[in-house]
Amino acid sequence: MGKIVSIEPFLLGKQTTSAQWASLMVLVRVTTSDGQVGWGETVTALRSKTMVESVRSISRIFIGKDPFNVEKNRLEWYKHDFNNSISLESTSAFSAIDIACWDLIGKYTGEPVHRLLGGVTREKVKIYANGWYSDCVSPEDFTKKAREVVSKGYKALKFDPFGANFNYISKEGIDIAEKRVKAVREAVGEDVDILIEHHGRFNYSSAIDIAKMLEKYNPLFVEEPVHPEDIQGLKKYRENTSLKVALGERIINKAYAVLFMNEGLVDFLQADLYRIGGITEAKKISGIAEAFDVDMAFHNAQGPILNAASIQLDAVIPNFLIQESFYDWFPQWKRDLIRDSTPVEGGYAIVPKRPGIGVEINEKVIEENVVKGEEYLNLKEPIWVVKGTWRDSL
Ligand SMILES: O=C(O)[C@H](O)[C@@H](O)[C@H](O)[C@H](O)CO
Ligand SMILES: [Mg+2]
Image (cartoon, rainbow, N blue to C red; front, side, top):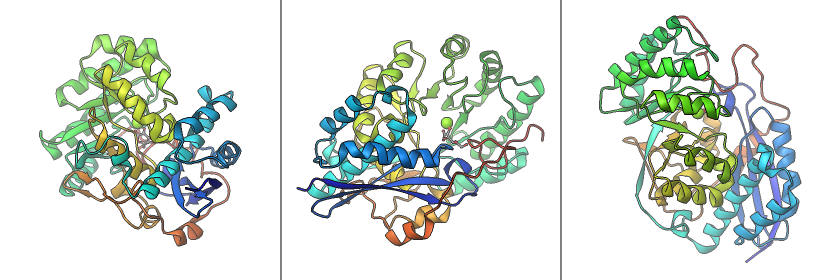
């Protein structure tokens, strides 16, 4: 088996798309001395140039290494990078390389990654839709688009009904959010799960007021109800509602996740493979979560490589809840980038049996979509918002 000879980041995308937070992606190609290729992906997070450079810098640790030694290689990175415990740039670059190495291991052995991680616990994984509600402002907008999601077969969908409210939300703001939530619940019926995204933007008292409203709509979970660093606020939130809390998309290592689980502050953990340390660390964190009786709902808001890698892990872990997916709302170039997709059918993604993470890259699409520069920055609507929903009145 070959050693790693090159690690190349490609910044791909379009500077303006309907999904700004994911308009660009960093694709990473890892090549071995015997010509095998593995693919990884990481996030840009308004730092596209930085992320590309970060992949280049840390790749020096991996050149000449055996891609099979994911643990030893990770330890080398951990040892050399003094700031990895506080650097999303470092963990995100590392994560892409780790995913590419797993893809290589699968290709060498001829096995899908899930068979190398523990085998199949489920042949298909339940998906929830995100990204479906761009430009939804009125309850009627939400009704129309929610019906479309259900007609595609989805059994669960997530949305943020809070418009441009930030930190504090007034009684009127809650009333508007309620009209949107009610519209979606009525459109999808009681058998489809609704998941309420807060994007970590409220103070605890506002989040508690919101929770009182949400309780009657029976969401599967509420996500990041308070600011992600506000542990004291989250404790107060937990004391004041029985709604189930999901969080963790911004967590960059397993020890940090334990802080939340140890205090009983989270029901469902949303680690993301690109930030937590690739497949290697995502598998470990799932095991730790299992010991706390916490189920996994991996965050997955970026491109087709991360989507494929997440599905591999979902197939394996015992404590799987549900998988986020933007797949049906991807810009076309992201779908074209891979030859073999894992389409969502009847609300589930069928776990692919192909070697590696299960996708082949169409290299022509790389050439056509290489971009230079930074993400388009819209100062009127924060990057994490689904396009056209940053409106606080109906
Ligand atoms: O998917 C999620 O859970 C996220 O919080 C984000 O990464 C996205 O920005 C968002 O959902 C789009 O608004
Ligand atoms: Mg989120």
